[in-house]
Length: 510
Ligand SMILES: [Ca+2]
Image: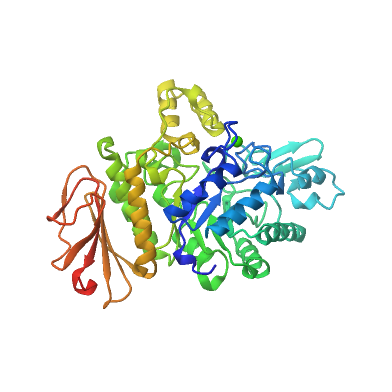
């Protein structure tokens, strides 16, 4: 995409973003009504979580028709209007591409139940299952009487996996992508993209989680598919792709998004979001800023360009998660905003993050809508967790925190900070093209430099995620360019949860 590095992305979870007709469900007309506000914030791209026709078993990540809009959100005319109106404001629309699996209500799957159908090999139908386990727990195979066999589903039984060994599948996907790109969308966020190619269906090594994953995690076949989609479809449009990946390390990420490989433009990694958990997200540990910063810095050093994010529709709110002292919530969200918008990569802002939205107040399981949370609660009780512990797990992790309607009046002060930081990113090329260099990580303080070369302007960013002032000497020639506390003079210490951008006085010519 032209000038991709300059873009700032805003993720919309349509269900809870803006409801235009008062039926309690966010919709496309609601998004259209908010476009000007997003343009004023400085957003270049909006990414919509799925709005395709779906039985909604897994929040739209189970698609029954890729070329239709789910009626709860409106019509295809609304979608066309959204794309056109957004473009008039200089905003591109990115859609979710969920191609590891379809819904079991998709006509391909329904037809595939007939062994003589051309759709039979679009899915993995077998007489006997292997020993693989699914992401949602339990076996990855279900028996279907009508289909006369078992079919593979790495997620829920309602989400059968597509088999890319049948060339018909990739042709269908290409047509779907062209359908949307011809309408003028700006690209795709590719769901669980590094597991789409199943190299073999042999039994997997027994494992506590995801037995069988060595047969499909980031295989050569996945890279071949991504190259083919890029060559035959994406390269013909002005668009970009970001991959959602599972169990990805820095080497795998580099293979997926190194420019010379022509696969994806960037990926979402998960490692920094896992620094406050043990093995799975349900078991939270205390949040340690240093550990968090070290992981972020490791990815900054390892990957030339990556997607930057602190929240999405699957994660609790960063304001409640990464700020341990509730007295400094507003300050902390501003410091996190500075980090998000001054690291190297494409920043993704999740709806409501720009007004400092925190987790919901939840009192009991009756307040919980997320099916996943109810499943996990039942499982925890079944294996002997007391009620209070099972509830504590859900309360801290449920996806309802991110999926509840946003109170836009929340914290306008935080919004101002976002606006300022977005403006700096647009005005200072060093924040986009500059190299990243870690300066130090200690005691909840993270300091790094952005610079184009040794001679030109250098921005030094210092982020504190601690409730006490922390002494730090940036060096004689450094002055405050911007502080999240709004101060101009530096007295040798950062205030609690403060973010400061220092600028090299000699190079700035001030
Ligand atoms: Ca509505």
